[in-house]
Image 1 (cartoon, rainbow, N blue to C red):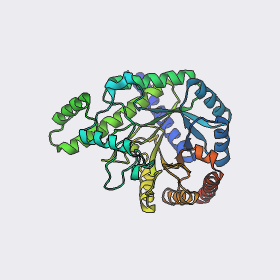
Image 2: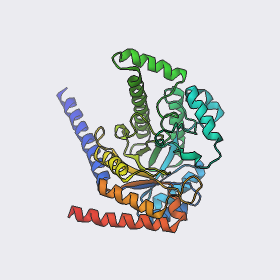
Image 3: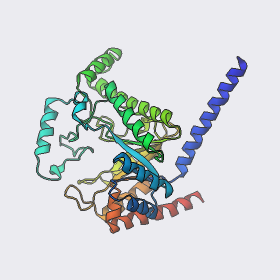
Image 4: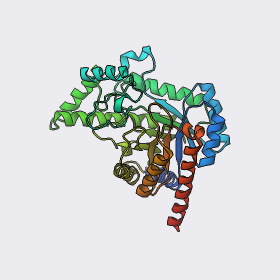
Amino acid sequence: MFARHSLLLQAAAVLAVAVWASAAHAQAFPWRAGWCGLKDPEKLVACAKLIGFNALIAHSTPERMVEFSELARQSGIESYYWFSLSFGGKEREPFRQVMEPGDDKQFVELNADADPAKHGYQFGGEPVPGNHDVLLTPLLCFHRPEVKAFAQQQIRERLEVCPALTGVAFDYFGYQNYRCCHCPQSEKLFAEYRQAHPDLPPDKALDQFSLETLVTFNNELATYVRQLRPGAKLATHVYPVFLPQPLYGNQLDVDYCWQTVAWFFQPYWSAEKIRQYTHTVVDEQARYHPRAVGIPFVGVYVGRPVGDKSPERLAEELRVIWEAGKTSRLSVCSFNEFVDHPEVRLVVKQALSEQQSAASEIKQ
């Protein structure tokens, strides 16, 4: 019995050291990731190496993902399967999230708005104060066991055919109304939660229930991926926004958690807000999970009807992020903008180069 107990203690110690070493490496490694469409994988990889990014996240057909992940591996770039819980098919209609009538009405009105920018709509980011936003992409309800099984199947099938993938990146893990789901299964589970937490006011209980079940779904799926492929890395973008607690990402047991510090669309976030969010993302990254690394996320669209962030604006956002977090770790969408627009590519390359030099001086 004593020998077995000693072996268990040794195994636990080895695991703790491994988690610590992984976290320490991630802290030192200036991990920079771009979310991209696979229009031209060769140009994407070349651009990443040119400007100092070392990870790319994409989704496409299995054949396309095999090509992309092999190319990335040969070039020393990490590659991630971009997996989302968006609706994606009539066969999953019974598992779709349900909103209240007022949210459904807003959904119809936003879809009917002919303005490409939809008059200040933030497309899943924090709404402009006074606006009523809902996500225009229907989402699956993660209170349904069928959705968990679907997610596991999709990830398993993609990892099986793409051995060169570094890992999986979660996206669209949230609520279409930014707070909760009202499908029968969600309402049933919430009623049980209320009974177990009778002292919580109804609104507080709903917020807490929604957040806890959202975090649990993320973490259980992350555990599944690690069991499926030991050594696989997990990443996530906290999106769409969860209004009761926008910066909950450090509760997610992933290797890299991207939380938005500067969004795509006007009105652009103030320097103070960027600074405040960056502090939270970086300073509180390992509050719950030692392996987790907080990554500031920046949204960039250039020359699109829905968004057109100037090089000067992007440079200013990167400057504030660096000053607030003293980190050159970064996640950006859409990375394709750096491929297509040399002036934006130059801004990022210069900013990251200057930040790397400053980081070296700080260490000295």
